[in-house]
Amino acid sequence: MADDTATIELNRPEAQEVINALSTEIATESGPEEERALNVREFLQREFDFQEPDFQESDPGDDDGILTLDPSNLFGDEEDGTHEVQLSRGEAAEVDRALAEQEGSSEGEAETIRDLRERLDEQFDLGRG
Image 1 (cartoon, one colour):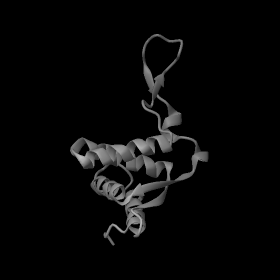
Image 2 (cartoon, rainbow, N blue to C red):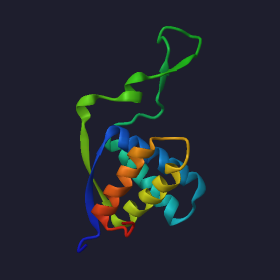
Image 3 (cartoon, helix red, strand yellow):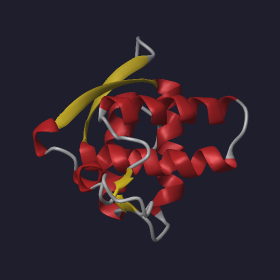
């Protein structure tokens, strides 16, 4: 690959899987790997308009302080569709590592993760295939 960056198309559920995997990765990494994972996670959160926190007051006029999950942040707008996301080869490798660790866990969708990893390998020539 002549250029160190390429684009990959992600839909909202795929982006959420990547964000979840990177969040786990950030908790266990340090140094440049942690920084790279954090940067990609924050970029995807902005790109797909994931809100933090994903909670809202149950009734704005109610003073009981109960928070409920905001359904719009759980599913998002279907019209958002897919986004072309530009990553460096190093960022793609970091995403692939995070997804590999997530793939065997009970969290996430294994098929979605495998598909994402294959597409990352094809687009960035990560040497997995």
